[in-house]
Length: 362
Image 1 (spheres, rainbow, N blue to C red):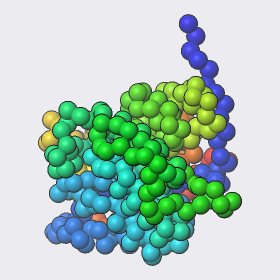
Image 2 (image 1 turned 135 degrees about the horizontal axis):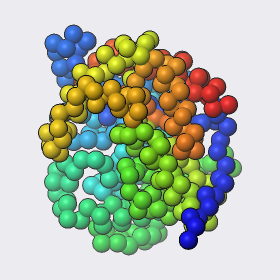
Image 3 (image 1 turned 135 degrees about the vertical axis):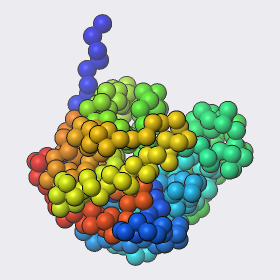
Image 4 (image 1 turned 60 degrees about the horizontal axis):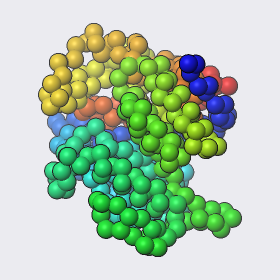
């Protein structure tokens, strides 16, 4: 039996593609490594990083939700609201909102508030997250992991349409013709405008098909291995979009990286801090300690986009071409990597990398 053909969905021109930055609010250290910043300092620095991203032409900033000591941000919407009041054009997204352990109605209220403050720049990337600390924190059983996400995504899909909601499930009280406030801002023609929603997927075909069933754009989290390994998921998504009768198949991806003036400097700056972040998670998950050779291999052949502007631009362009993607987010926070080096990386990304990627994709 032959494999189904891949539908020919339109892909935006390079000038219309979206290039963003992504942070988990990793708690950082000073450049000399002698002092670890407080969570409060880290959050204030994150706002400054977003302001710089806005000023150098980066299209979007995405902020992740965590409830752990090594990440400063537990409420992305609050940080996004602060950023909204001090920026002009940059899109403001979560990445991800852990929908399973939150109330979709409250999520909608918070994000529609950010959307109002920012005059229509808010977006949301929903997912199950790679950590589970929010479940016991909010009194939710991990045994309900699947049903919580499935039903809450169903409810979010209705809320995101912007009108009154009728919904029934098992994880919260039912809603009947319920309007939620503040309402979304209308489109230019005065009709309700759906709330921009992406679904983040780490590598499950079932999750890819689920995103397509709601006609939500797909955000691939590529944190290990090359973009080529994820091409089958992009193909499955396009096939599922065609199966469900949808007109577009919007795909984005995010990967960790760091940019400096030279390849050597970027690697030397990132390596010790990436190793620390990897070890923190690895201790919980039973991973062996990362070696320098493994790091170099991941930089040369895997998910880590580390190097000079030209090197990183070519890697991003290759990934977008392989996946047929229209959006890329650079996860610039990597362990305790210092804020000062992050700021330099963001500036190079906005002023040199993004224009070069558009040129390569033309």
